[in-house]
Length: 309
Image: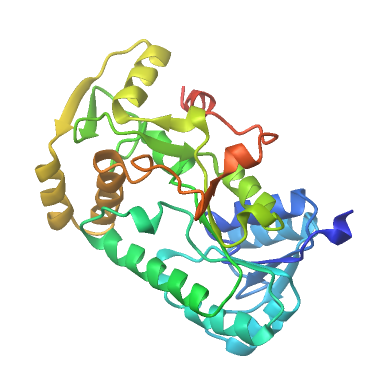
């Protein structure tokens, strides 16, 4: 019964990944609350998005990370809090930790992670700082004894696959394809709807309590060499492969402007250093989503690439 499902508050609900979490929560029958700064925004696209939320039965809650009273009030009305705030607001979630602690009723907190696992981080530039902030937040959650699940979904497919996995490119490869390192290290790509589904399935699952939820579906793990070979097969074209050696990638990270420096840093950590696939999941700290939820028919990279044909 829907009434037995946890009431979920999503903070950062109109952001890139936030909206997919909202859709999944509503679709899977949870009473869903979306925190928004403005319930009647001037921006037409945002108005449209909020209308879609309300059409799905989502309750809009006016609030802000910088308005502590609104945070406490919103948190007290639910069982589970999911934060999907952007990279610039990672540290501001400390206020959310305080609100959760004050409310004292939260069964699970999922802070804004939704990327690579910060405990296996080989970034060397600006991405390192955001990973550091996430690590501090994880520690604060544990120190306060707040029940948690940390979501590690690796690469957003709609963000990385329109370039066939190239970092910093503006579109599909035309004649050349740029590869970081030797191109043999695998990264993981997930459809954003699937990220939403796996995340929401985990909120009431005792197996994910105080664990890292890794999303590593077996058919979505590809190296850059494999991606371009796959794309060549689909298009019948051949692309010149341009390999950028590791030292040169590090140099580019240091010299590139924002946001390219962050993208290169994230790409370096995944494609060169293996931040997605270079370690085994320790069962004492983590679980894997596609093994926990075999009923989820996730979208495979094969299908995702067909969207760009």
